[in-house]
Length: 278
Length: 175
Image (cartoon, rainbow over the protein chains, first blue to last red):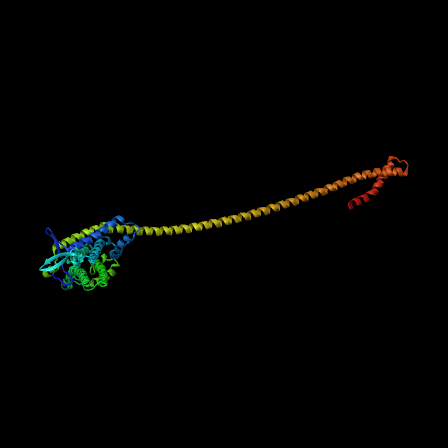
């Protein structure tokens, strides 16, 4: 476990989630606590919405409706017939990542901790670690995204169609060259999705910790504001990339599935391909 | 790879915990957040749509009512004008009729009066003629102082009257 502890301050940076206590065979880590806090916040919002939503929205309801309206519009425009099934997981990913990122910005998160002595070092293990700064969290979401776009591909093109799209290149003689690249690109999406989110949030945490230790007063506040923007952007990127992969999977990659295409979907494909290339 | 997993502490317990957490949250949010809010939003947009339609229909109705009202007013005005015109015509006709009648009546009355006057004059003339004969007789008798037989008397009177008559008639015509 790498420690960056200076004499004056305890900048505690651990690349992995740290165990807090053991519950039978399960090791409860501080990122699990962060995940649970995000879940509880979202669940209570949902509970509020189920009881207090009205046709004429109040301020809070409008605030809650904003992501639904925004992402709902995007999903609806790309999948006019399937949007109602695609939207909930996309929205859940977006909201969970967003809130998980913001949990990391709350005061006390990452700074209040348990004193432990490990390997002769005295260290503070934070009780709460933002969930997105744990690769387990981001990897799970990336796997969920992978399952989503593969299952939507199968659902849209059939098992044979999906396998053909994935493993047979167009033209067919290119298959030996293209298929390995294709498989790697499909699998690398898991790594790119999970690592991008983890890296951004983890780097943000380090940045905040370092700024808090090196400077004072207004400087960490500026970075806190930046982290709020990054947190929202990363949540949006994760959700939109998942949607893009689903769109690519349902649209198919080449010719031969034109009956599945709607006229507007070609444009969506182009946009999705360009977005997916990054 | 092994080292990487070790370094990031990717473990099955954490993955399963995160997966269960995600699925639970997916269920909760879908059931309690997305569905109610999407339903409300749909309801709202349909209500707004209906409101706009209603407003349009109301405007159309108002326009229709206005046109109807205007048509009724102009119709009433036209009818009133017609009525006045008819009334005027009737009054004129009646006046003319009354005048004509009055004129005819007046003429009739005048004619009759004239006739009556003529008759009265003739009668008076006859009467006067008789009296004049008697008077003349008496005067003549007194003047000549002699008797005459009735026959001679009569003849004398006839002669006199014959002389008088043209003078008398010319006199009456002058009056």
